[in-house]
Length: 455
Image 1 (cartoon, rainbow, N blue to C red):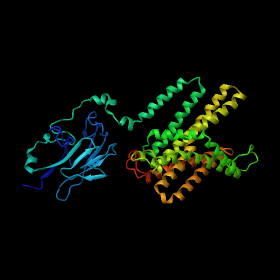
Image 2 (image 1 turned 120 degrees about the horizontal axis):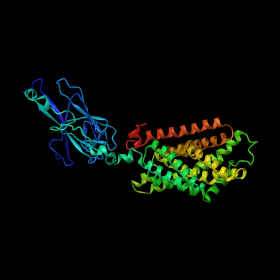
Image 3 (image 1 turned 180 degrees about the horizontal axis):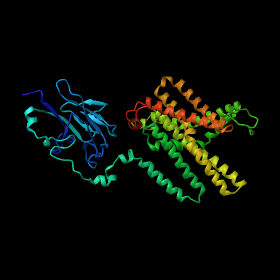
Image 4 (image 1 turned 90 degrees about the horizontal axis):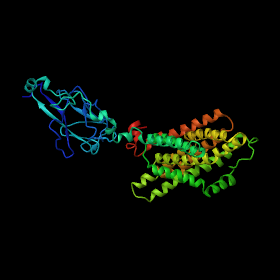
């Protein structure tokens, strides 16, 4: 008999990877008036053991009821809650929300726990004869009540965090910060070593900021290799060749006295002698990474090379870090320290050198990293659109060089103008990052897309 009061109850049954039921009580009722959140957080309606299922996010997925159909039948949809490892429906990655049908298999992560969506017909007589107290609540296994107790993982949360500790809790930056702090204490009284430690940490923090905004994973050893390659180029005879071309052949050389030079002439000289020369020099490791990766098999080709604008930005800013560290620690800080020490004393010179070091390294986000990252965007865009590379590369090269020259030229005129140019350079870099994220062929796998949302 199927009267109008008959209904279909829905359940989630927790099963193992091969489809066998884990235990007879692992069936969770779905009520038509309440959504069910699945995850490791104790506030979820379906709480999974944190030690057994570390691949499951704290709030991984949700099953939501839909409005009943004209014949009073209810239906449910499954939605992923921006989980780290994704939700799969019948072996396929879940895109948005999808309606559930009897027999559907829900997987939390590619190798995580699985649920079967099931329904059963309840006749009116069955409904009337069943005591209310026997009906299981949503998210509670049949035959069990949710105990009011504290679990072992709640008392010792570090045991149950698993990969989330490194993915979401910034454990690696925290460890590096502690290491750098210890090194700073260890080098007290050794000014040169202390300056190297302080500069390296600030450069790491500035680069990490850009890396997080880009949101694409790139092997750390590739980024360090690019930065080191830039420093080696600056210490090699290749630098002398660049200086000869851009400051000897081209009008990039500055006169000994800049008092009589006009701003326009200074800007032109900076454009050739600083902008074009230094941006090409910093782009060489980026172009080298692309050429090396062309002959490599996948996935090494994608890991090392430049295949999209995000790759170009990440490698370009890494190159700028190497350039900034060597230029600051090898040129600006020693010169200012020596000059002040001659006029006052050694201690004052070292203090002034440290005061100069901090803004130069920290300001690289709106300086060298901005110019090189912006040019890196165009290098990646040229790889993504090879037929238009002859248009893309010159525009990026000239734009980055112009920003660089404008910064150098305004530095000797007015501090307010310098702020404007710095903000402009930073805005150019951020705009390039946002556009690169939108153009990225792998944007669905990028962590900025998963955690910050697509741009």
